[in-house]
Length: 217
Image (cartoon, rainbow, N blue to C red):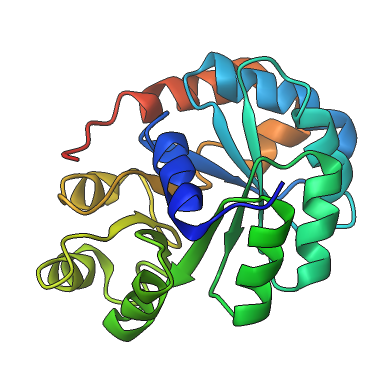
């Protein structure tokens, strides 16, 4: 069912409100998808972004879509076909490093709420003009970090952001303390060695720590 920009932003705001951190996942083996998602959800991080950067990504989304309490999304959406594939696999929201008219149209037609990337005031204003007021600030650290996002927020207080890219335990609070940040995306809660070793308890513990982070907005 198609979705409007306003409804997409409303849904993204609800998803971002679920936890202060959205795990950004690059998963190469679909067999670990379910236990990984279960560990993250049990740790208090229900919104999961599976990036379309591996051949297994769509199978990972399919497996995670069945985990109770989880809300799985597809990251690194670039083309309309990516959108169709993600929706068919069970994704409930989409994340993109940027935004094109074709990608936005595909997400709206497929009913997939899009968290589109913006790194400048101009990009953010262009999305706001289309009706989107919840965006991804990407690449966060390379684009100036929390200080840059704070500066963008001053003249554009109506836009909320999910900073992603270089966010870590060392700087997460810098972002989450900003009034225009609703959550942040981070990969540190899913270390590759713990996934390889099947250390789901360890990942759940990292998720619990991340879920305790405080945010201003």
